[in-house]
Length: 254
Figure 1 (cartoon, rainbow, N blue to C red):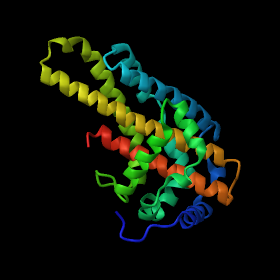
Figure 2: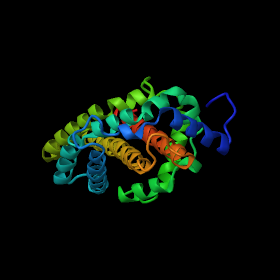
Figure 3: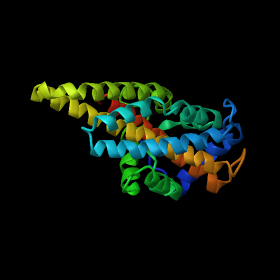
Figure 4: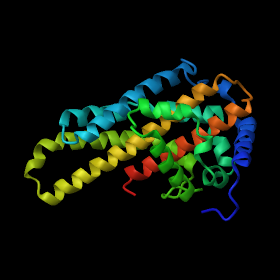
């Protein structure tokens, strides 16, 4: 936990707004993509569908067909589009300015209602509970992820981690037919690993969905976001980055 006093709501909103005014360049979204920022719409739709598939697969974790479909989906989710958009828009640079202040003061009051709608669309039954848990994780693990890289560096690693998770889940699905003869210890270990993948991939997907959704929402205020947009985009993206970080930790079994 930070040693410095916690910022008040007004102070924290003003701080996030200042970061937005200094760093956010939403007009640059999609400058490295042929479809421009429209690719974020495709990413959002694809990831939301995949998140719903993930929740169904988690409820039927022994269904080989669902596991196989989910594994292929995780390998082809194009998470790098989301990471590139965070980079192009200046969000990652803003979060790198002072991670302890951003993540150590994260709270419900700076998370826009739009995030809750996005989470419901992605299959989260209780968005407020999901947001609260991520905020507490953020405030506990402030400046670094448990595997000793910054939150923004962890996000840049996310596409590779997600592809690896998809590969692993596909291998598990292929091996499930042979698992009946495995001993109880091996079956228990495999089940535990599947659940870690479900949990980690879900957090990465939901984080990227809320982040992408709010970048698109912020496009209505180009170049210099007004205070009502600036702090909301920054708050939502901070929550998204922390969700992705937590998901990567889960995938690593930490």
